[in-house]
Image (cartoon, rainbow, N blue to C red; front, side):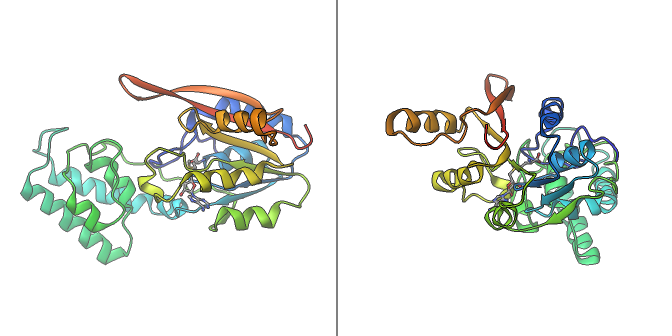
Length: 277
Ligand SMILES: C[S@@+](CC[C@H](N)C(=O)[O-])C[C@H]1O[C@@H](n2cnc3c(N)ncnc32)[C@H](O)[C@@H]1O
């Protein structure tokens, strides 16, 4: 299986910076025979788990149909090369004028009609201001476009999810399916609280976020969060003041500094724990 340092297409929240520490930590789970990636996102953690444990079963919860985006890379490349032709005389990084914008939209519309599929998230990163994503035609048409079209094709990745079982269900259903099976390790990377979850729905409130902690009770797990979410502070406080059980007690922790922009940073955190520790 080929090594992927990052997901083959843009995906907000992919854990690419944890590659080394995640793979290193996986070595502590030698007895594992199933990995269940409850919030699979781009599938990067599933890919790495399968790489490290080729004989294990790896279940990737593809809640956003990322695998469909991967399967359509060549189609997306074709659309991007059309954009390059349309924008050949337009200045790079500048707003795209009305006429050229409508030519772009026409190409998108035609592609959608013709093939039935457009990867709006990927084309957004070539047409919209950084971190802005459209998920459908109307969304895209509404936005100011910029000439930030990627210059090279995306590499087709037919083997990216080789040997991985792909499912698409609510994480609670998937957890219930696997929670009693021995040798299971859960990979738990929920949408961050208080961040823009624009590309994958906006309904993640505090209660949803706390519900996920049920998946940490007595299980083998990897859990990802950031210091922006304050979840670790909250569970510490509850333990100290109300005597609640802290699901992170005994977990190992790896911190990774991240940048939002030039003057604001935050810390991405990976915690992992073996059941019974
Ligand atoms: C932070 S991302 C995961 C990123 C992933 N670990 C990676 O490296 O690409 C969180 C994911 O959870 C998905 N999600 C949101 N609600 C969910 C639910 N109820 N059940 C399962 N997945 C959900 C989001 O769509 C998103 O793909």
